Length: 351
Image (cartoon, rainbow, N blue to C red; front, side, top):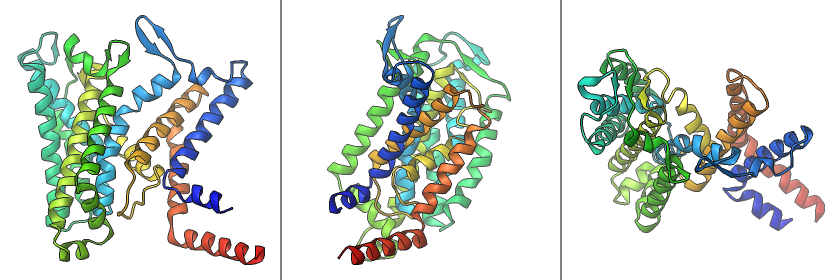
């Protein structure tokens, strides 16, 4: 029994268990429709590119995984969520595509500036948006959801203004590689993996991870201990904006255009759900980045599974909402106290 308790109390238990349930649902569905039980895991090379349901999940879930990195840091440090990341994605994509298209907008086949200039421009805008949110939260002590609500409503509209209320197309093979393939591997998977590895190394090899958790657990005590709480929270929001910029550029490259109305639409909800599904407390403090990444791909797996089962895209958010309700309920102090009390009673009876 002690081993079971140890496993269930592990922070990665919830995301891994949820992923396991999704995999089981896919296997049962495939077997019921006459397909081999391993059909979900089947990977093939078609036209020189990796194909398969598992590859599609890793590919399509990359933007959410990148957003989940920044969201995890923000939630841990400020005990609040950044609901502007989807709109910031759209704004960064718009800036990047407008720079690349130049005077040829709204349709360009040749890059007006080097690719790196357009990419850095989009990333810079993401950092600026993150800095704006961070200033409101860290320096003005505005509640995170209220502070980020400003860019949630404004960033997408600013992107539309920059694009002159048009979809800016950049039909260029060099730009398309970012959301396409490098060899046989989808580039978004490589970018997401690089972001995870770099962030993990920074958090593990420096004291940054410890500082973020300390501020999230008790901001006042951390300040007394000598930590600059405002600066740490501010930096987390800047990094969240940077992640939104990366995800936005990947999303724009995937469709080789800046569709300001649809890029990143409702992605902030998936990013928040990924953090919660990863076993992280939405009240801040200790976090597990790997759990958030597993949560992000689990969400994409749920979405892909719904599509595979013929469920309408309009209905899919309902299932996500149910998952959110269950996770938040599990994390609620009264529910935790109830299960702890129930476990204690069982221990007494067994004794």
